Length: 89
Image (cartoon, rainbow, N blue to C red):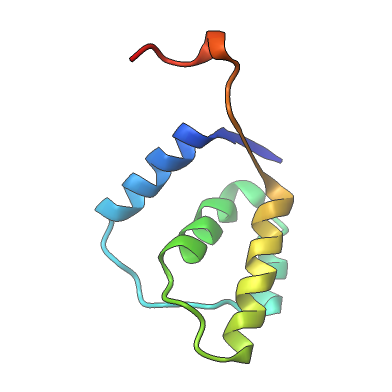
C-alpha cells in the first residue's frame, strides 16, 4: 500500500502535465492483473492512465476504467497531513 498526501498527489499530476502525452490505453483485466505483481512498478502508470486518458468510449473501456480504479484504490491511500506537519505558506 502506498500512502501519499493530497499535495503529493497534486505534484504527481503536475509532473504528468510536463510529460509527453502517450496514446490512450485502457488495459485489459489481464494487464491489470499484471499490475498486481509489482505495485511499485505499476501504480504511478495506473494513476497516469486514470488521470490522463480520455473518457471511455464503450463498455469495454468503461470496464477497464472500473478495474483500473479498483486497483488504484486498493494500492493508494491519500491523506491530509496533521496541521503540525503541513508546510507553512
